[in-house]
Image (cartoon, rainbow, N blue to C red):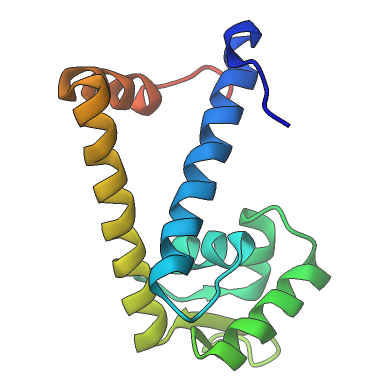
Length: 143
């Protein structure tokens, strides 16, 4: 069902456009890769890229239940995207980091998003895209 975006308020409009962009990136990924990565897995990948994090940190910062986070991470281990290991400071706590495959997937997905941004700049104009980025990067009073 298509939503008439012309009648949406700002919050719903941003949400709809975000969903549209995410679906488009996911579709482009799936068209060019045999490895399916879910939205939630992408969310985790983005949060841990370039670092190692505790599973508790991931669960808290991706706003997914602890149980769901563990299930996602298990699936990601099977896919070869992440590795899990004991934390140095606390052997009871587990950490997660991207594997080489996970890092490669992240970088390839960033290229997909960059191409999509370039397509938007062609349609909207680069100055409009730059203004939108400035707006979205500005300090908001709700954080």
